Amino acid sequence: MSAALIAALVFSVILLVITAYFLMGSVPLLILKHDTPMDSRFVRGFFNTYYLAAMLTASATAVSYAVAGRLVFAVGAAALCGIKGVGLEYGMRRNAFDLDGLHRPLQLHGEGNRRVVTDSLS
Image (tube, rainbow, N blue to C red; front, side):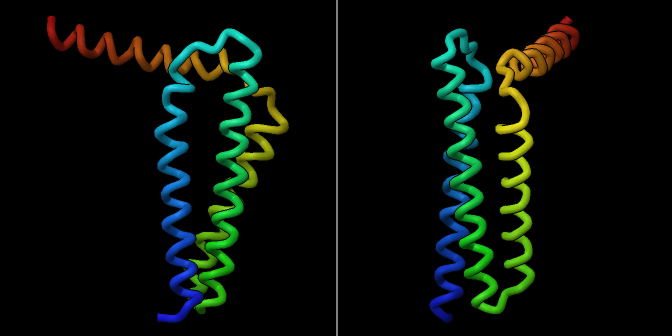
């Protein structure tokens, strides 16, 4: 196994760890109500950090796979980098990060789940 392939696998694992960490850490941030501007800045910074870390790691993964000669994996990692770049640009920078807009779909989802459970029990 070449050094480039080992580096690509290490970057892939790092990308999985980053994604898992931010996935588990973002759920409480989306559920809890944030009333102060400081909370809003923290949530924005949290997601901004995630997008930047994932984008940098995905680009390093793509370069490592390309050097190792695994072009299909390199294209996949480059696509992940592009998706994160689009998410960063359109989701974080262009749109106002509206926390109330995030809470409403979650509230509707919770109300729907409650109705399903109560209808099935009665």
